[in-house]
Length: 326
Image (cartoon, helix red, strand yellow):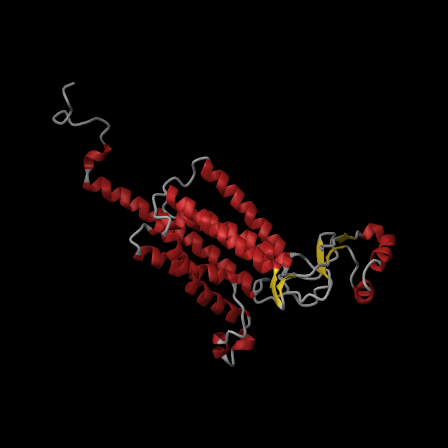
């Protein structure tokens, strides 16, 4: 059962009674925390595993993530059909995304932990050491997914347009599933919305009982907010050309939000006040901006070339020779 206790610094007199409600081991943890970090935190205490039968158990976070992925694929299929694409090709494109996402994610993971993998880069191929960096996973998955879409003979721009909103949904809702695993906790904090995890776990963050910034929730909420804005823009008629611009706007805004949230991560600063993950996100923002500029220049050149090829395209009236008499 989920148990949330909100403690405010102004209500310091209630702290001891709240702590007394915890189990003895948890009370000892809180006694240590109170001596070091002011307690003003939302505490979660629940079993992160769903016991199926026997010794078989599955994380609630894994179940939630699977539901998010299925919903994103279904949404992509509906949008593909509406965009005159074959809905069944969504499966092939999704399969094509996987190798690029894994390779890109592992490269990003190497950059995050270069001091660990530097002497033995072959460890990146060891499945016993899992880990992916989300930013480069999105980049790699985009490249291989676009390659598969091109092999299918469809417009890559249309596929990127279709994938933009489902991708934001998967990234935002997927981040929120980390709340169920205790993963993605940020720096220690005494804010009212800081979170801590009690109970045996195991939880996905180090020192889960330490009140910390819920970085995973920040990124998830920010991504879903961006999704809401773009859905409204599309509903009002924006991005009507379906040439892929929506995808680069969506990914660029998501990466910008990720840069801001990265300042709350526990990772050490690498350069310019940002950690390695934040720097990767900055690179994605720049890449999306360059892609949008290149698409705009290409479109204008195409329009100019068409006008040079057919100078009559600028005429506002038909040729009298071809105009019907009635």
